[in-house]
Image (cartoon, rainbow, N blue to C red; front, side, top):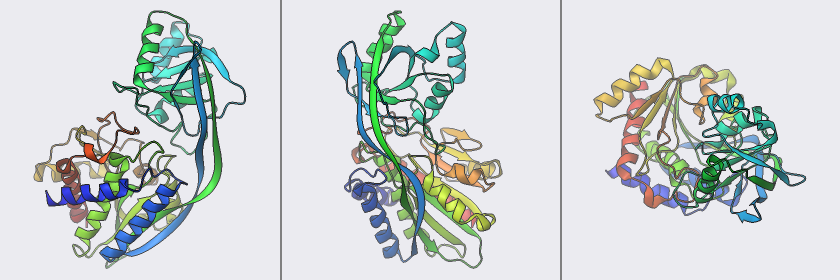
Length: 387
């Protein structure tokens, strides 16, 4: 349990810096903290700049029958010039199948605002947008009225319809009324400032005996609404801990990379790939750590097909049970940018099992040192065996 408690202590230090939303002070403080930790370990440390479209929430409101609900804007959704008023339609998780079913029943999606309880707004929003919806509302699936933040897309494109998130109490009440065939109109207004800015990845380099290298990666940014221990204080803390453990472990070169801008669509990892495009073939594998280690987490491994059997065998030999597998890894974190370029990749995550994801309830007190240690053990073994 030594490693698990060490990672937990680092998570608490990161979270003490506050929310790590890109462009704000918390993210810059986290970047500086990672640099300091890599320097203490003895790694050669580089700051690698990348361009990204920042999003700064300015204003969001939603009114239903003269009652104003608490809400948060969905990042990258379009701002309203005039208030948008339209009837609501509940679309479940807003899958292609659910949209097709609504259309078959005659629902006028192109005259409505769609309400979805999908955990990931970046999955549901593009489907609602493509269906012709006028707007989108994300319902947070928690018992209280806590609100989950989210982004409209994860492909670095801006959305074309306005969108907000609301809490579970308000959302469930609306859904029940809609299921009773009540017609409900909502009025949405929001404003967010979008501009091009520069961010930085932090790269800690352990030299090796050849150009070949293994990347162990995590994103350090979070949403503006909390400290987000699980997503992704856990991944950032784990790469710092692994850097300490692996400094003298192998003759292979390692890069411990803390990406920025993941929550807005993998901007930091995209910048890394663009900068290193000529040497991507030298990457033995990317091991990406994102969103794990809470008390409610399950353990998920996503792997490219060439690494799937290797991952299964490593988990079995270390007696670590995996709750879900994905081949290739889901399009939900920084490994995706490398997978698109044919780089072997492993992603360790939490199966989407903790509904506190992207909410203020994702705090260090809800983390499990035992589960943190299981992920660190797997990542260490993956890296050692690949080297």
